[in-house]
Amino acid sequence: MDLLWKIFYSFLKTGTFGFGGGQATIPLIQEEVVEKHAWLTEEQFIDYLAMGNTLPGPIATKMSVIIGYDLGGYIGAAAALLGMLLPSTLAILILFQLFLEYKDTAFVKGMQAAAKPVVVVLIAGVAFSMARSSVFSGVDFATSRTWIVFGLFTVATILVLLNELVPSFNVHPALIIMVSLLIGGLFIR
Image (cartoon, rainbow, N blue to C red):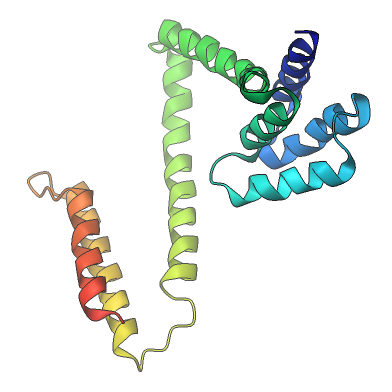
């Protein structure tokens, strides 16, 4: 039982002080499990990090589950995951409660108004980056495949814009995706 508390507490500290996303948390996890407690060797840690990077999802939570399982089975995995997630979960609950309490104040409304265009630009930047790497990467306009992909990109962009700009126009995004999958399956080989 003592080991489970140590696992929980180690990942609680990591989850509390791990600012900057999952990759920034990795050195903190390493400090706890390799250097402080010597639960893993450096080689084991690197192997677990490689394993965690092959799985989908946030690396810090995957590492906590993998290491917790190695140290204490399913209960160890649960203790590590709970420790990793508890700080951010509590922070979100507290911030949400504060938001509910102060959402109608001029200060919070001003914060929301300022954040909206920034979020839109950030999402547009991600969309542009994805389009550049997936649609326009290695583009050879001499092939019919490229024209089909470019056409799908253009039509999808127009449909999304129409959905946003024309209130009476309403095409569900899932329908756009399904049609593009069908066209891709039929015409892109």
